[in-house]
Amino acid sequence: MMAIPILVLGILLGGVLGCAKDKYKASGFLDDYSNLKPHPTDEGIFVYTNPNKDLSDYSMFYVQHVVVVFSDESIKRGVDPTKINELSEYLRNQIIRALEDKYTLVGFGQRQPGTMAIRIAITDLKPAEESKGGASMEFKLVDYSTDELIMAGVITQTLSIVSGQTQWLPTRTLFQNWAARLRARLDEAHAQQNPQLAR
Image (cartoon, one colour):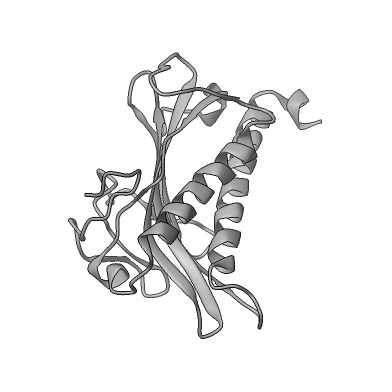
């Protein structure tokens, strides 16, 4: 363990899960991987949603510091720890920026009803090489007042790059996309609960 907001561990619950087209390595960050289902349209995304919880019940969010749970294979890539820290903070900041104009952000320990804790682990970082770059993460959306799981998932994706792009641009772009996806999913849930919000 490192005494910074980064946690670098070996695979605790090793094994490659998923079908031949969509695979991921369980890092141990999630408590249970057996209930994850492949996203019906998006390759590389596996999700579990608690049927007894509704995203529309949450309008306040605590975005925890992103941790990193790397496999031995990922560690061998030799990514600079400073860059890892920078990218983990970048992901957290993208999520905050995606939410702050509409939803209320709270600090540590503010466990009031209607508050969701967003917990994320980066499980792989792939610098741009051979025309592709990417990243993988696992996430838990948790009721901050009760610690009940709302949603959990694994995302492992790559992006093609063009000549001249910086080494970590695809990874940053993926982080932006992930944050935007979370915001869109929350907006959709709230709009379904209150159609006036969709106008």
